[in-house]
Image (cartoon, rainbow, N blue to C red):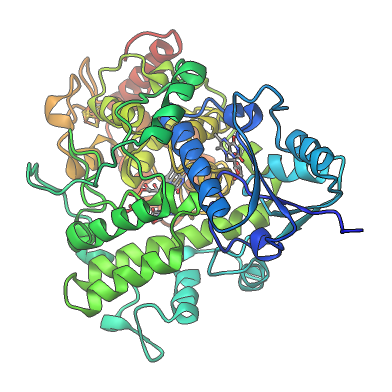
Length: 511
Ligand code: FAD
Ligand code: DLZ
Ligand code: SF4
């Protein structure tokens, strides 16, 4: 008698040929299970472009596995037998193939880990080893430290990977070149944009499906231009390294109206779905620097995002556990304003960041952190609602990477696990780094009055509401000092106008 096959689960963000579950499988015997299911497509109202990207990439990955000789049981969303959950599809396939065991790679979402642990058949979950740093290594690094700071972790990762190292010294004599970065950008019609991939017939079929099932979700589906295969994603990477990496460092924090991508790579969605590996991405950037095609501040700044921030947040997510997404250290309870879902706003920075999020399922780091994230934090929005919004609207969003960035870095709802102080700013920062303020209905220079920039009002309101917590923070003392020196009438006006603004926001007025 032939042994029963095992089911090899490959999730939508596990589209990597060498992923742990596939490595542990026997292609001549086992059955790969992939499934488009309602539960995954609707745990948050994902942007239609995100769903289409994943379904198209999943279908093509399944085709590539079949071409290599794998047996793949693929469930399409509209298969009549589809049970619409991952455990349900595993049970159905176990019945179909006489399998009694599942091999999976650990999902990047505690909800799905719990679902697999509770499945009515045994699931062997292997660690996801597509990261430079294993979880035991991260835990060893974190053990006994008073605070976990990315910069020190990053240096360990440089040493471990050997990226941008000269012997045991950092290339160029410094670990971090950010003092050369953070320049505002000027509008430039000739700035090269990321390549656009024309949908083929298979992707078009997915687009029709997504339009009919998820057309009501926030977000524009067409034109759809994302890469959906590894070959296309590699092309997108090469295009970035050739055309945009050169000025990545200088303009990584800049924001410009109508220029959604600037010098960013726009590869997060490919990395997180598994179409690209972090090593090949970093190696390509390092090679460009060694060949003298890009400066060290750009290569270093870019590689730091990947072996530093990306690995750091992965370690934090795994270490902090399932309750992390429910943390709310600052006790914020305001409902997420309707403008996040596209309701009209007079704040040009918010309209720009949210408008491009609707159209492209993309905003770059500083838009996420210093515009939409900053506003939600200053306004005291419930972090769980902020977390769900970010998880839904970005094509690169999965809990393991989104939650530490939102709950931690952006909303300070973890009380300082990810960052040492909250990322808050008045309108001045946005004005310095963007061209948004020039065409805004508000005046960034106005601190009070009918056209005062809401960020200016809410900034002080936030700091004063949380004075007990932050006044002793050495990096924030100066702000309280500035407030205390302000004229008393002015201080009162700021707080009164901030309260009025928040009342209008809660009432659903266009702000
Ligand atoms: P680039 O700016 O070109 O950077 C290159 C790569 O570095 C990215 O593709 C990404 O893989 C990595 N990277 C950069 N910053 C970070 C970071 N802080 N954490 C992890 N990786 C990073 N990134 C996600 O991948 N998914 C998310 O859901 C996500 N949510 C975020 C929410 C908030 C509030 C903030 C402030 C940041 C978030 N980020 C998230 C990080 C960052 O904004 C995106 O990785 C980046 O904008 C993706 O675009 P890009 O590929 O053009 O990145
Ligand atoms: C995000 C997503 C969506 C929209 N749909 C599916 C799906 O139908 N099938 C699937 O296997 N994965 C999907 N995903 C990705 C999962 O939600 C993801 O694997 C988990 O959130 C863990 O990161
Ligand atoms: Fe945003 Fe204020 Fe500038 Fe308007 S004035 S774009 S609200 S920062």
